[in-house]
Length: 265
Ligand code: BGC
Image 1 (cartoon, rainbow, N blue to C red):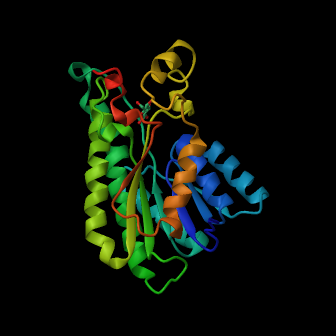
Image 2: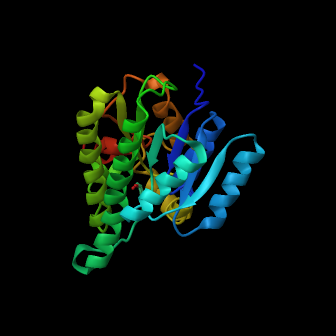
Image 3: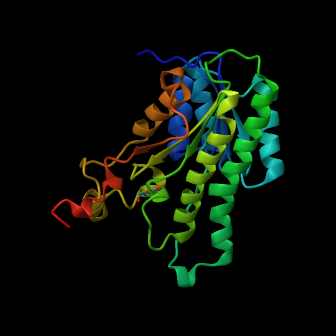
């Protein structure tokens, strides 16, 4: 199976680090022109753009906080200015502000819901509005593809992370509802739910004693790499997955299999 996204335009939010960075790099390697969105960190985003261009690909970096309506409008306007179309949205931006429930501030609740859930709503809506303007485009079997970055915590409750788990549970219903709503327009909508992946955000949890503890939660016995997720992003964005719609692909080494029950509970 050879996957090419040549001639397609992908917007990747939160692409200056972690899973977004890996996804942007892989989409560009598959031939897509990529918009590398960042919020606070322009420098790594620009570095990634330079790297993609040096490899013969097309990319631009665009700053925008996805929780802000007007900034999302700016992100899509800049995308159209640079590449004329949007074919693929990877709604990836996400953050954590952890605290036990009794100590969780409203500000931390709102920040996490704002970026992880409202941000995905705003970006998906902007993508859908753009797809509606380019219905005679024929670069893919689908008229547009949206991939939401969720988490195993859309199904696994996570003590000390109520805001994060609630946001990801929300992403699941958001994705499935959008998928139900727009499938008839040949727009495909799916989620990826990663487990523990070696990214900067997970630096502490994936090394030393913490890693040993974490591995007990992963039946397949290894911590994931950003490429594990990036490969799935490319596949889900391509015609190779054209009949996959309204689904969540768990990329978690089996973390969502309730491994605590391995030895008969
Ligand atoms: C979180 C990681 C965590 C993983 C598994 C992800 O959604 O971002 O910090 O290690 O879930 O618990």
